[in-house]
Length: 304
Image (cartoon, rainbow, N blue to C red; front, side, top):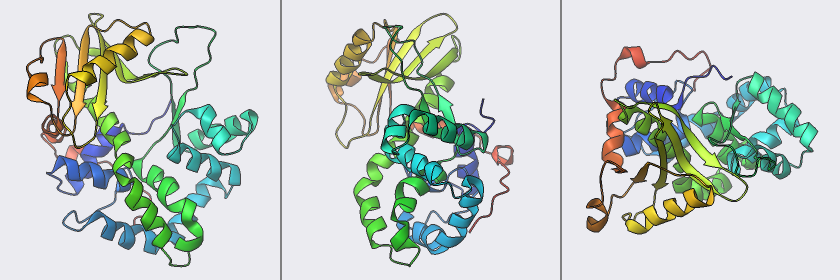
């Protein structure tokens, strides 16, 4: 089991250290620099900070990371496959062009040395004979950014040519933040259930279906949820999609949760009840409440 701080602990530490008050901005900067103890001036554009703190220090950061990975090509291939793929372990092996045995050996090494952790689906598959791949997750957001957006373009970056990397980042950055939102929404949901508290929560997936949030309360109630990140407001069709996913997975949910970054239609807001909870960015701000030096994590890695 990983002993790394949780995503929420890392986020609160990052926000306290960098005096973050705008939760949306904090999530975007955290997705790049989180988990490493970086001090960042959040009045500067994110791209300027990436250039200043990461790209211009490529050789030093690369050297520090290769001390951990021992410059093993299989490890680097797997790390980029996890960063760029759907997080499922077996599909990451295929993306990295590794055999099952090679992939498992590499994953075991990367978990042992603190770059990755393994996560299982929250519910057993409907067909118990069906093998459901675990997910591989980065222990710090910075590692995912590096292996998704810097390492694949190392040829240009190490020579000081950042054009290819910057173009790719510009085209993919909005979807890149989604995993951080998902993790923090799960933390928010867990924090929100105070009386009938949550005993387990995470995500559900099988070979054909995925439910972003699935949990169970102490009283046995099943919670299912989804996250919507687009600029359009969520409407009642989102609930219908979630209910269809639950039916497909043979899951009976007692409480449905929808997070929408851009809010909800007036019609959908009227549906809010004890069995349908709606969350927005405003709700995520509660994750920043009562920050203090007790939230600050100690990091021993070099910072540039």
